[in-house]
Image 1 (cartoon, rainbow, N blue to C red):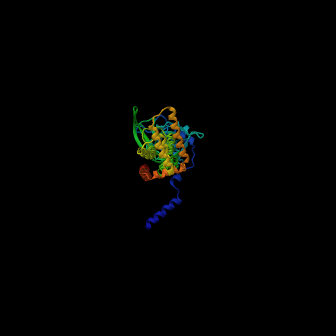
Image 2: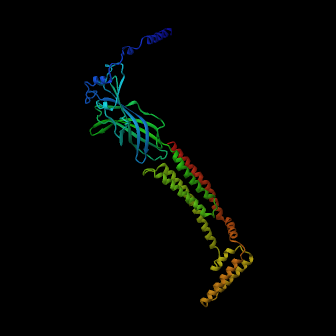
Image 3: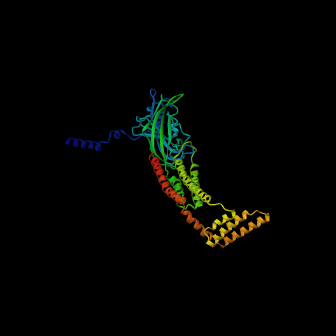
Length: 455
């Protein structure tokens, strides 16, 4: 233990008292970059490969600076990236000329004088080198002959859009690198150990955010031979908060409003119809606004399942209303069929069945007189006209003497209808629907959100 401490102290003293060998041997640079370039380019040929006997090993890496847009309509994305190609060319080593320089940096003009593997993006719709104001190209030579060529470009690339889970969907976009000029026999490209870097983790494109990336290497076969291909797969996740506010919440409200009809009295049929139809129209309008921003696809999306189910719930509430109204009409017709038919004039008097006893007595006399007059042969048209007029005046007199208002008669009829078996059956059906519909919708929501949020 004591021996180790002595050795450690000895090493520290050497470092302090005696500078490193590199520092001791390194003299002040006496060669300018131009002089070094003239020396290394004296016997350099751009047409010759760095390695004559084996493929040149080229490392590729990329940095995502920003993602401007991702369009589901055009199946493409636009991004600013840095991508680099790194290889070793022993002919460009300059450490023997200047031991103090570690690297030399140049712009795109010097790049044209060197051999390059010509690594490019082969799957893009368009690529442009940024100029701000000069072309954003960096060429760096390390003292051992390593070349680092970097471009800052704007890329418009393809995406494989799958809207099955829209708006909780994930989309994948791709960068594909190849050596455009050299096949596997001359250039071997590989990903760097840290192939992809994202400058800012909060980078987002419209409503998408980067969640993951993967790299792939494989051999692509062409008629001209085999080429190494590097693929960067970028996964984007849609931020669906906008759709929660603009689509899901309004559809919730539309469905909830359609259930209010179950609480309205059976006799208020127009009000119940208006609620159901308006809810259905609002839902259709909301669905149309969302679909207009999506490309036409032949498969079912998550939003389709949601909207069709909501439409089904509202339509089912209208069917329940139609069933109740039909049964009401059926019961009313059955009620009238059980009554003994009387003449067309006396049918009007049915409205006065709740009138005072004297009016009801005179009503019965009117009925008897009508039957007796119908048994007498009609002598002439004038005779028939006189009989008709006399009956009309008597009926009008009865109505004028009736002290019950129209409102009181309706209330009386309503009170009797509420005691009918059908009214009780319809009310029970509404109560059951008001319980069953929300429970069924709750079950659908549990299944829907559990499936798509955990997928």
